Length: 224
Length: 75
Image 1 (cartoon, rainbow over the protein chains, first blue to last red):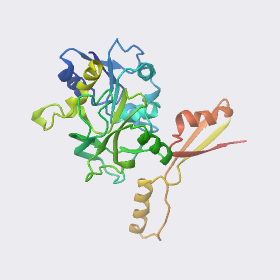
Image 2: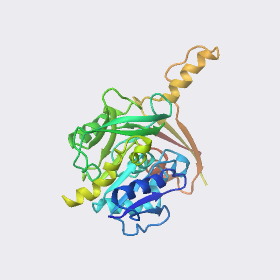
Image 3: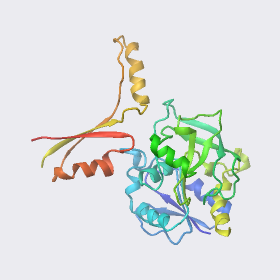
Image 4: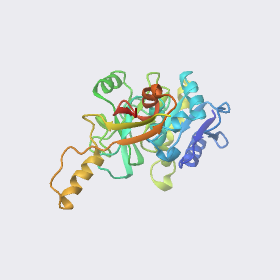
């Protein structure tokens, strides 16, 4: 299993994403993919990491969604390839139309930066196969534009198709998102996006290692 | 080339925290209260084909899930 991590100008979490993937699938099995290249180098899974791609100009993720690499990622996703968007990467996947909904500024207007508890709502996606439904994961969140939003009719559709993959634990409401959603998937369940950062939760030295479960999931899902 | 202005606004019903912040700031400056403050964007551009503006808004300048837009083209 080879994992590719897309790097845009302004991306800042790509190295942690590569390290997290290597911890999950083996050293040497993760590499960076440059935003101007359409070549995904034959990887088996793609991570769109966090940061401030293209300076978040216009709207977070909107310019990155139009990059050559994202064109290739969209084709890869349509063919069933596992794609994970983290934070800004989640915004990019929403802007690219690969995931439902979009992100608005946190209701608090503040930059949220702390561990949050996530509840796994769907363990049958490409990126949650190594978790179980109802499991709680402790993962850091750091964002100001993280209020996932879907109009009522779209929210009904997303819930009806079981596309809510993560919610924030009941007593935690870091950004005011619709239905307290932290992450969603596409109808095919191979593309997942979430605001908190699993790549920062992979070493006991810094607290939780729950993030590794996401990076182990594509290999696990492929075995099923 | 024709000059165009695109006014982009948060859709009705979308909570706009920036608008709320401005609303709260006004009394602190001694102004009379203001309500329903909404903050959007103004994009000005000269375009070869004004007929493309709607598609430009749909595909790039606005996010139709959360924003309404209004196109003004100078005669």
